[in-house]
Amino acid sequence: MPDKMIHPTALIEADVEIGAGSQIWDHVHIRQGARIGRNCIVGEKTYIAGQVQIGNHVKINACVYICALVTIEDLGMISAHTVFTNDKLPRAFAPDLSGLATSAVTDETLPTLVRRGATIGANATIGCGIEIGSFAMIGMGSVVTRSVADHALVVGNPARQRGYVCVCGQPLGAALRFEQGLAACDRCGRRYSLAGGKVIETSLVA
Image 1 (cartoon, rainbow, N blue to C red):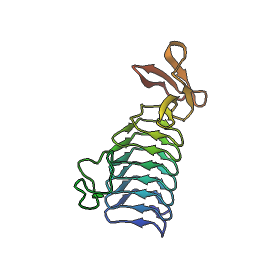
Image 2 (cartoon, helix red, strand yellow):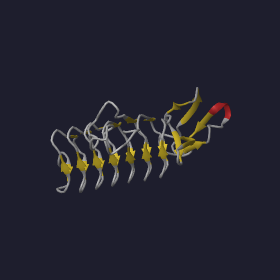
Image 3 (spheres, rainbow, N blue to C red):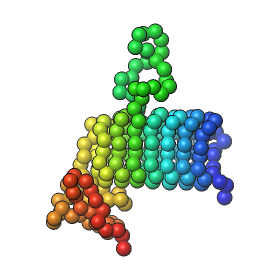
Image 4 (cartoon, rainbow, N blue to C red):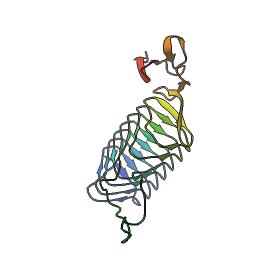
């Protein structure tokens, strides 16, 4: 098996790192300086800017736009047509109206962090300067304008929290409304508690 698979139509610029076992599909464009870990999949027609950091075992579906200063940790899933942003004051022109604004990273470019195991549903739009928590689930079509807690399920425009999800993706209930604040996943058996507004896994699968 080859170290990695890069489709002949993919455009990979200089100084791009792609880890062993990763698959880069047709018409993907990866800009200079991007870093992609091991055993990742990057679907067709996806754009990955420079200064993007992608961990190991990350699945990126087709037609995803990942702009500069986005970091996606291990085990993340970015579904088709997701769009990331990094500018809260977007204009085509410079502030003095002298011409086009720069497309380079500046002091006003804001980073976005997608924590380990999070899933972003199809056609979602992700605001900048925020963090999406570990194993969070972003519903399809959502517009995320603020940070998302670990294990949170958020949907809508603007996205609002509607519950919690297990590591395996199964919903755990609107607010962990169980005896003594405990919840158990009926899919995989993991157990959780809610303390200080944070979901804590209290047992692992047997």
